[in-house]
Length: 215
Image 1 (tube, helix red, strand yellow):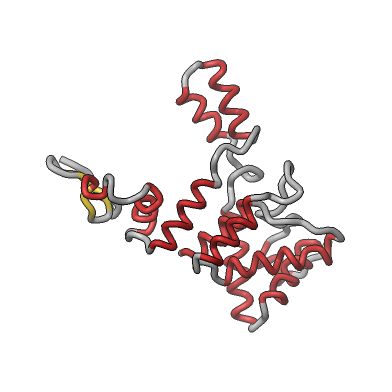
Image 2: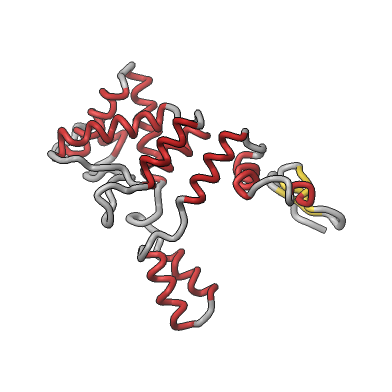
């Protein structure tokens, strides 16, 4: 009658998501809470639910981004919303939305910090210096590759992405900020020495650090 996964299954009489009847959840928990339930398999603590909710809010329409522009263009031709959504999704890539590289960089940096017994500032300095350097040593390349830009950093429309400091502030206040959030804050302070000017993390840099700390 049905397929079953670790996330959900259905019978003739009910729909189960992570062990909970959907009808029992409906009207009793928020969308942020059910998203966390699907994602992690458990209902979140109140502070975690508030953080997830804040992350969803900051994804609201953000002017003329590549995905919104391409979605509008496609929809102007087809007249239907589904092709427009597909057009927006197809614009997602290395320079827009995709944040896995940022997350992996923070994870690798924090692991290195613990292995070496370094401080946050020492680790941030190592990463900033290594990325900026034209001649990277083999140890750095094995960990972080040949990249010349910091993932999750800078924004073409803002001098400083206004959402990032707000999310970091909330993560700290709600008690969900850990080593990865602390690291990106330290990295923001370390960059100026090697770039000669202040550069700020964008919302992807902040979100990935928060999500990694939240597990």
